[in-house]
Amino acid sequence: MNYKGKNVPEVVIKRLPRYYRYLGDYLKSGVTRISSAKLSEKMGVTASQIRQDFNYFGGFGQQGYGYNVEYLYNEIAELLGLKDGYRAVIIGAGHLGLALANHASFEKRGFSITALFDSDEEKVGKTVNSKPILHIEGIEDYIKQNGISIAILAIPKSEVGALAEKLVEYGVKGLWNFSSAEIKLSKPVAVENVHMSDSLMTLSYKIKQGETNKEN
Amino acid sequence: MNYKGKNVPEVVIKRLPRYYRYLGDYLKSGVTRISSAKLSEKMGVTASQIRQDFNYFGGFGQQGYGYNVEYLYNEIAELLGLKDGYRAVIIGAGHLGLALANHASFEKRGFSITALFDSDEEKVGKTVNSKPILHIEGIEDYIKQNGISIAILAIPKSEVGALAEKLVEYGVKGLWNFSSAEIKLSKPVAVENVHMSDSLMTLSYKIKQGETNKEN
Image 1 (tube, helix red, strand yellow):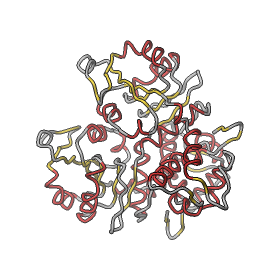
Image 2 (image 1 turned 90 degrees about the vertical axis):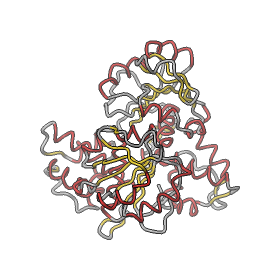
Image 3 (image 1 turned 90 degrees about the horizontal axis):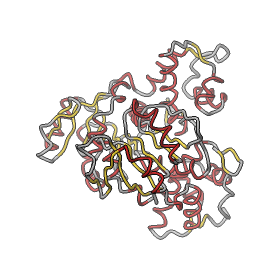
């Protein structure tokens, strides 16, 4: 994945949120400097891997003295776009949509979920975690008028195709896709697919291979 | 993570479910042999990385002729424990628990979710996707009598601590943890934490850095 023209491996990108989480924990417990060795223990990757990861983004400061926790935390937040306060809507007010609407940590990370959308008249008009459930018919105006960057797709696979194309037309820049639909669009858009069963299969591997008690 | 005494990097393990999914797609569309180059395109990692990944597990056959899709698919299923038919229960019949109970792909992967557990009398006695919601008081007997290997924790952080320890005592071998609680137990147990916001932050990175239309 690109960063200022450099091709950053996907695994490195996927580690950024974990660095961010761990640094947030250190920050909260008053730690001001952290060595790559210490961070390495926590992350379960080597210290040299951590330095390599950070070098893609300019290195984040002197390694001999350790990293400045607050600086590193803020730089990674910036990289991740967390300072941009992206606004999101959830498409689909089924169990998954409601679970996501109630998820506290997204707002903590700087995201703002402003509404849910559904076509079910029984659901429209209700609120979940102070967010209104609106009729899907109004989605175009809503996205345009509220500067929505992210659409969270909590709808069945069969409903994703045509809708995804429209959402991008209306101005959405990223699709967080919980359905198993493969999203192939003509316009450029960021897509992150959530494959729940991948995670379950990883757990299953750990059980099968007797891999226990590691953090992730 | 261990495999027959070898230390397999976590990133390699995390790729196994994706290999498995893609191979399943090839199998369904009648492809019998696949080159590492072709698989490489689909996975977004280099062909040599794929060969390296597979070498941890014995290599899976001649690379010059490509891999036998069905053989590779079955070998990875075996590695992932998918042939063991692990039985699971969901703890917590809130929105997330219900969403997970309705998720079709777990059963397709060989897992069997047999029941949900909750302490809410209003919920107990109902069924979701043909699975009963049972009272949490009966969990010990249920786990022991039904050979349950996996507990899916769809409960708030504050409720996880004491319960996790007990579930492992009763015989559960793996915890799939959707709460943000850190699980540290005295007994060995496989744990897979789902950090939803990591995935959202990855999407956010892609939006911020203009990274579009890649599969994952």
